[in-house]
Amino acid sequence: MSAQPEQAPEVLTHLDGGLGRIVLNRPRALNSLTHGMITAVRAALDAWAEDDRVRAVALTGAGERGLCAGADIRAMHEDAKAGGAGMRAFFRDEYRLDSLIAHYPKPYLAVMDGITMGGGVGLSAHGAVRIVTERSTVAMPETRIGLVPDVGGSRLLALAPGELGTHLGLASASMGPGDALLCGFADHFVPSARVPGLLDALARALEPGRAGAADPAAAVRETVAAHAEPAPEAPLAAKRAWIDVCYAADTVEEIIERLLDSGVAEAKEAAGQLLGNSPIAVKAALAALRRARTLPSLEAVLDQEYRISCAALDGHDLVEGIRAQVIDKDRDPHWSPGSLAEVTDADVERFFAPRPDDELGLEGSRP
Image (cartoon, rainbow, N blue to C red; front, side):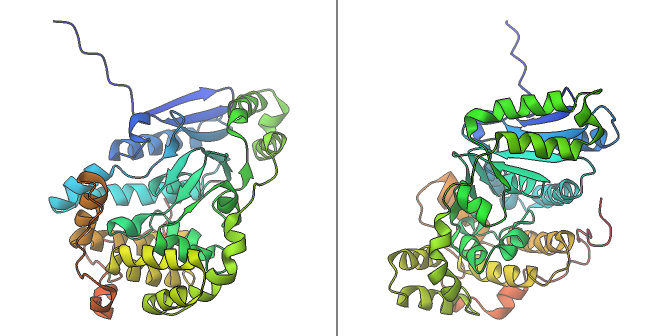
């Protein structure tokens, strides 16, 4: 009997010149995240933080379809049906990794080429240098499956100009490269064809003995600037006239009423999207974004998001949303509660309630 071929590692790491390279390596699954991948990325970053050979770190995804489509949704579905213990541990380690990336002691560069959603945003948009390409599609689409924007995404959305983040979070809308730059999810636009040259130039500039090795942050800035191009058009900028007015309302019901009464076709489409998403998730998402604006740090937001995600694991809509969107693909979720009117204030507050035996506890104790 012939030996079975060894399975390729889900995360590839290596040192290229002075650049630590991390490659998410599940291209057939859009590099969706497993718990093992979170552990592997964390191990590499912890080791490289103390390694003088590594002057900066770059995150990319294998294949040409995307950096990362988020968590492995099928695995999430199976675990949530079984009680969610595995996903609680996954979220705990994932959010701690997001915090580490935000405060990493060396320049951390992420290439958000292609699809970058959910957990992929967490691994990239908190980095020091965030690059989008013409192929980038960036989104926090959690309300479609009965979840609420997490991985620090509620903070990013809350800090976006005007009410753009509220629209993106509640309607699960996507951003192209220009919109990602406008909304603060990215810093630079580099055409995909120039990315390999950028990474090679960074590796060489950061080699021991090169001038860039003495000031890695400056070397990264200069090298990226040499490969970047002007930001492309941001379609959301022209939509702020109705987005800022409609999404400034205090309740989801009033937001939808304003969208429907706006006279703008795209606003009416957004209302339809909100009405199709999980009612309880949409209401919890609005509360999360409003509260995130007042929280003092990313860590405080991640603590809040952990409570929210654990509450979603305890509920009905997450399992049902994944079933409808990913497992059966009938696009006909049966939400519970079934309408916005049936979602009570107490239902929403359950997402934010302290969990005495299961708190993330990042605020005040960064990893």
